[in-house]
Length: 111
Image (cartoon, rainbow, N blue to C red; front, side, top):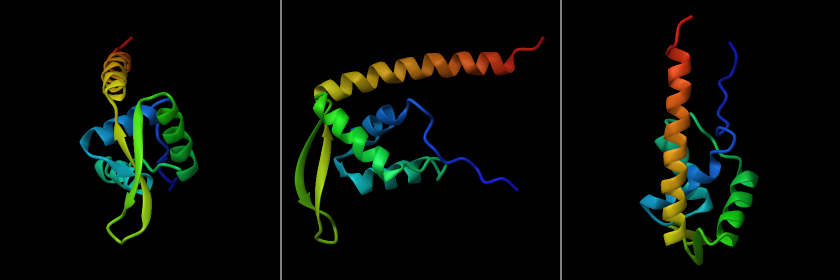
């Protein structure tokens, strides 16, 4: 039996990160774990891709970060959503819902 693909859908990683951080500030590993947990392990985020995306989102002013301690006393960078990040999330969500609706209509169409 073929292994199921657990890659995040191309072009959605930023939106998924923003949504995850809309719930609470998290460090990189926490973000990856939350995405896996909430998606029911359908999505697994590559650590390199996650770090690149976090840096890009922070440079764009969509995330803030500060150093803190994890539950097991390790130093980690915690990310929070900015007001700009909240606006971007809302816009990306609307676009995703529009596109997902179009795909659903295409899959349901006959003949």
